[in-house]
Length: 96
Image (cartoon, rainbow, N blue to C red):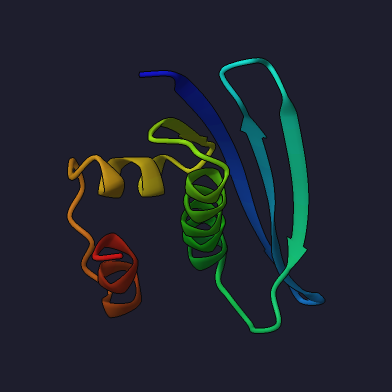
């Protein structure tokens, strides 16, 4: 199975929230996306949104084996099930 790569970074400021997403195909093709969310999100929510959107985009592009990277240790550990998500909004993302 061919490996795709996904790098995500969510951001939240007083001016709004959004995400940067980079998808790399097994053939080295790099797709970069910048997304501005139409809703308020915390930094952690923005990071989860970036991950969920990036995974969906990669799937639509044909990815079936995907390795994802994030700079948020909290998100990584919750997705790996190393850390338990305790806040309701974080549990929601873990169940997606």
